[in-house]
Image 1 (cartoon, rainbow, N blue to C red):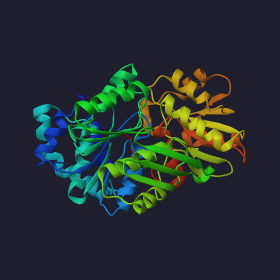
Image 2: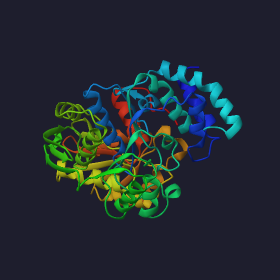
Image 3: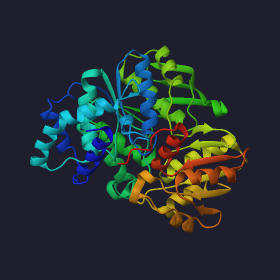
Image 4: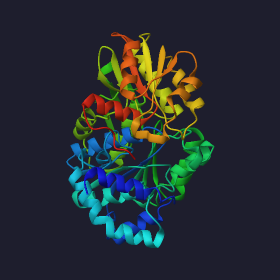
Length: 429
């Protein structure tokens, strides 16, 4: 099969797998010889900031001399982004070859426990490929924690970035319910690092205590002091039990990224075997596409994949701190699994001067129609498809000295990024 045929096959097969939980993932891994057993690293859950924390941690561990596997989710342009070694994605050839080698086991488990989901297949594929090639793994949880396929792993360290409202259909309608789902990644004897606050922190503390886990909390055991450098990012000081680093450089935009970086620094120390130099070099080298990423000037075009109200609000606040009263146009698309009224209220908190609504082609039938979004948004919004034409219109409305924020959906962000890079369109999935 070709790479695109493989992606299509995984997607078609995965539609028949509807069961949440770790049983099938564990069964497939065990049939493979349990390549994850003994693998150390960090499993990262939370509502927002998982990927940013993960990429900072992967960069630090790589700078310390490790061969680091990284499993971020979702992807922006290609599924290969979800399987990285030292921040370099798997080749399309190796992706296809690994999947083809897995097919007999996937078929056998499907006959016993039902068809694996697309996410389960991707999780197992990533581990089968990376386990023999790495000595540490940084894995981002997909949905929630307790029933996510990645929770079949015990890497020794758990990170829970924060808890807010998202995926309530699956995780519950209260912060307490959502926090219990995410804190369930904590295994007996783990080391735990968290940025949670309030009732969510209380629940994380309870899970950690029940598991006999060491717990470091941002704002208590871990402290961070940050100074903005405008479009250049931030300088930060991070300290915790047995460590202190001053004048660290972080080039990610958004004041909330300093908390994610601090969690990564603390996690690296909890795992051990890092120095001030590796922390410093790792953070300074960290790049994270699609998260307040500036890709063009005149007007500025900024990509941000935040797709829940909390993430959109944070990104909008951070962007306004950078552009002040400059003209801002939002290029926006979203998926139907979320409430457009809530999401568009968060978009309005950015105080855009105009909004252009569109649909990412790769989102297919999952996209909310642009006309519907414009209708809900009301005055100041217009609907244009396809996304390439919508970007042209947004830049026109912004003017040479203005700004365009592309947001609302990672599908849309990935599509615009691919246009900018003249790359193939985002993998459909």
